[in-house]
Amino acid sequence: MTGSWEQRFADLWQALLPVGRTPAGYRRYSWTPADEACRAWFRAAAQARDLPVETDGNGNLWAWWRAPGADGPAVAVGSHLDSVPDGGAFDGPLGVASAFAALDLLREEDFTPARPVAVAAFTEEEGARFGVACLGSRLLVGAIAPDQAAALRDGDGVSLAQAMTGAGLDPGRLGRDDGRLAGLAAYVELHIEQGSGLDGLGAPVGLADGIWPHGRWRLEFTGRPDHAGTTRLADRHDPMLPFAAAVLAAREAAFRHGGLATIGKVIAEPGAANGISASVSAWLDARAPGQAELDALVADVSHAAHAAALGHGVSMDLRRESFTPAVSFDPALRDRLAGVLGAAAGAPVPVLPTGAGHDAGILASRLPAAMLFVRNPTGVSHAPDEHASEADCLAGVAALATVLADLAGA
Ligand code: GLV
Ligand code: MN
Ligand code: MN
Image 1 (cartoon, rainbow, N blue to C red):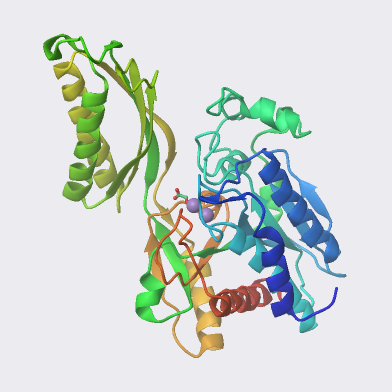
Image 2: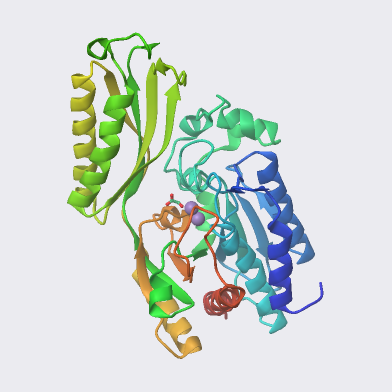
């Protein structure tokens, strides 16, 4: 391989940019052709660096740098390659491309790691296809049962087991992998910031403090389909009306409890413009600074949705589909990284909380984990306006290399 680490980062980034891009944004859903193209990009990046790649039983990718004499548990760095529907370019891929580029930087400086170093890409972090966020890391730590995961279905009724089989993987290997976890000393995930905190502070790179507890709940309103032009208002059992009440209740409950609540996905069946719906399915995404606030927020939405359903003669069911408790990243690791990054930058590195979920938050239940954030001047994420400048991306790579040199050094 030739070129500076900066050039190699640019090459990695340019090679990935067209994959899964549509005029509306990125659609890189797990176990689809776009996902396979992302995986091919990962394998090519690893091969160009002589890093052997393995796919674990949960479909997560690992590229290994085992320098001569490297011993003991590994330091892993990485993120994910899948996207939300019509997502931005940076959420996930920035962490994986930066991980490869950080290795390039360290090799350019003739650094020899005393521990194995792994670049990881976790499967289905966004839960965009099968509904459970951080699916690959959740399976790895045993936070979801393998048979439950295998039976998850996408919007077309295809199960995870079927999708993995179609991609040449054995779903019988899904599940907790204690051996792999025992081989890891720490996991560090670099990620674009999903807000404008760093921009406000004038800092290109920051560290994560913790992650709010958050989850997804599915609301099912079942009414009676009928004719839009002939059914008297008094005779209707229209599931759209309690759904609308739930949307407004979510906003009010979020405000009341200092959290966030969003209904961003809704399916009305059968979907006739001139008909009353038979059913409305909606997904509530709720997050709050603490568990008590989150519980109160969801209870308020549930209560309001049930009451509205009753008032309209509609039945209603609310089910939790995915949940992540509050995460407080390992304070010793965070302080250590703050120390080396602050020394390298000649200024303290900001430490920020986030409401966004990450594989690092799932892995934090089993090993020391940390996150680096890269400035996002638009503050927008999960949408095409998500952005980091090239200079800030390179600052992120340099910070990740500093962290790796510290954690994997002699
Ligand atoms: C992941 O990006 C999430 O927090 O939804
Ligand atoms: Mn995301
Ligand atoms: Mn992400």
